Image 1 (cartoon, rainbow, N blue to C red):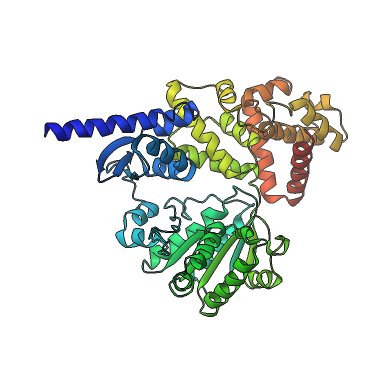
Image 2 (tube, rainbow, N blue to C red):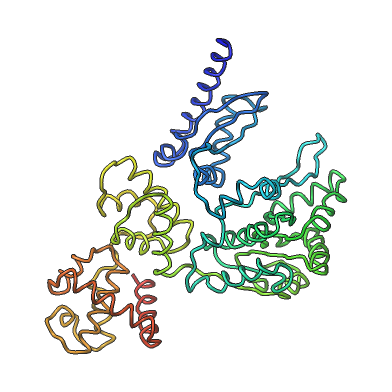
Length: 469
């Protein structure tokens, strides 16, 4: 027993050294927030088991820093080491669909299935990526920018192979394409756990195709992707560009699946016709079903995303802070998530209520533009010019209908496009009080919901101000 305890302590110390070695390679926020919380569980037969405090925590490391963790462990334990990242038993008690899926043995075995093509040394050539149990429809935040994609994905998941086949989802990086694709797979598994779901990136598919030929296992490859697949989820299809042999095999695989009414879902950063060096016959096949695009989220949706993610991270953000983040990070939901992860660690370490200025300092390394580069004066100038009034009138006591409307619009834009608090905006608009600003913003938002003309005007203001400042 003494020897066992000594060995356990030895391996625990080695593991701690491996994690400690990452401290100087990663930011303090990432290391303290995620890697410092990993714990040694056991080491048997060259298999290291590590515990993570939550499923979210585990998935975040696997999706963002798995290579760094692997290298640190190999450097200490040696190349023969294998490790498993598990979740402690009492850390995830939420009774959500995603948790049920994750804990279901039948479903888990399905979406953790491996491609069994073997290399010459009998090692796996490639593993299929897991479906992330957090990527459900319930966890997907939708707005005007992705509503079409969300609706199409739901319908596809409810009747795979029958409505939109293929479903082609395209748009820039970080807008939720992979989330929707995996949500389809999870929804199908929830309703029919025996369904054979294959989720893989185009790059992985090409690599496995090439190696299957090189190692003379092409029959096995073909059996997996043509015969043992009910739903094929393939990410980043643009990777097939300029790969003629791979395109030929994908074409025949596509035909086999489609003719037998098995569902195909594809994502790309471009619509089919805009993918360079892609064969015309593949472009034609991709257009057989439905193509939907997802754009960058608008401000209203970015705020919804921030609220939802901050609740998941158990951090309390004021409205001013949420608007500041939404106004400064516009390109993708992934960037928003990254910023919130950074904030969660910062706020945990601070152990006190944080101010907007502290948040600005924390996020300054990842912001895409200077703080307050767009100010209230510029907004007033632009709105006043549109309504043919003087900027000073927006700050006056005038209650003339046109001036009042312009003032309310300028207040709303100031709230949405600068980091100023409500009190600061009120002060800048003629020392008006906090409640007046809230009332003005509420009035314009209500008009926006029902008045198409107001929607167009506000959209024009936002586009011009965003592009020019």
